[in-house]
Each structure stands twice: as C-alpha cells, then as structure tokens.
Image (tube, rainbow, N blue to C red):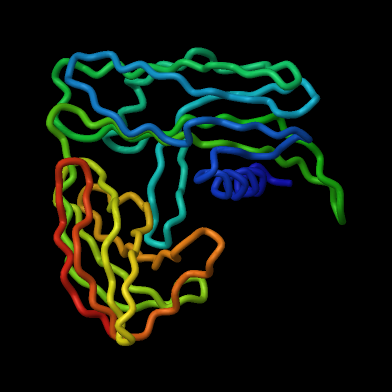
Length: 267
C-alpha cells in the first residue's frame, strides 16, 4: 500500500468521525472530546485548553499527535495538510506531547496552547490537532496497513475578529433524498460563523413548523449553502414533508449578529 493510499484511508476514517469525535482503528475505539474549539484570544495572550482522550477498549493503545492545516471544500468535506499553509498560525501552537500511551479503558487530559504574538493582527487562527493510532493490518484480497485519525478543529478569534454573515440567496434543493429550503450565506467578516437557532416556516397547506439550519462553518470570504431542516413535533416522529411553496419568517443568530429571515421558496 502506498503512503498516499494509506493517508487517503486515514483521511476517510477521519472525515467520518469529525462530527462525533470518535474513531476506530488498530482494534480499539478512541473517543475524543470536544470535537472542536471555538474561542477567542487577544494579541500577546497565551491561550490554553484541554482535549479529553478516552481509550474505551480493553487493549493498551499508542497515539501520535501533531497539528495540521485544513480547508473546507464546497462539498462540505475537509482536506488536511501537514505542510504549512500561507499565513498558518500553527507555529504559535504548542502540544503537550508528540506521543500518548493509554492503558485499557484509560482517560487522558491532553493539553495544548496557542502563543499569540503581540503584533498579531485581528483575524482567526484555525488549525487541527490530529490524533492518530498505530497502523493495523486489514486482511482481504491484499493485506494493507490502515490507521485511524481523529481531528480536533480549533477556531481562535484574535482581537476583535468576527463573522459578518449575509443571506444572499435561497432555493429548494434535494439533500439526502429530501427537498428542503437552502440559504446561500456569504461571510464578509474575518472569522468564521454558523447559523444557529430556528426559523419558522408555513407551507402551502397552512401547516407551520420550525426549521433548523445545518451547522456547517462559513469561513471568512466564503459563500456557502446552508440547508434548513424541518423539525418534527417530537424525536420519534418523521420530519414534516413540505407542501411547496414555503414561507420562511424569523431570525437566526451567530454570536451578537442577528439575521432576519423573510422569504418565500418554491420548488
């Protein structure tokens, strides 16, 4: 198996676990919390925080830890890079250790820090902390070494950096087999943002329900499509089927920013 192929398999395992903070590799399960940090610091500060790593198997495990730069692609996949990206803040980052050994069913609080230079401009420091298990051999037509990786994403707003979100379009689109409203959102700011909260919808049948935005990040300078998912009355019920057209009204938030939503969307 080539190094490129091995990294591809690792990346696929990583992408599968980004939202849940867990991965499976080398015959053990590793749980990591939280899956991301969204915080702020001032120029000249040293920001410190802790990742909790749990080995939930009955076998001792060994991990390597390093930082990576990443990009969030239009199809909502993440691409990681060991090479320093232009303007990367990874040289500011300090890790507690490059390797970790965990006993069976053990837990480790792993520390990291970001030393923000005194002359750092307002903006956002973004990087990933990659936690990787030792390769294990997977059988089949040809035995290949595969390792699991967990990525913890860090967003650190420096100074007065903030998102400035604007809804620039809307349409109906089929996502995961369901036709749902989608907002096109541009970020004019210098830090990432997400749409949070609920917006009310009233469809052609007169039925009203709440819709929740997908929690995808919108990075500075990016335009991203954010689906609004209709919510059922309770967890056991199926999501409402929309009778189009759908009238949206309400407000979504990110930090101190408020986005008023008033639109009618037809399929």
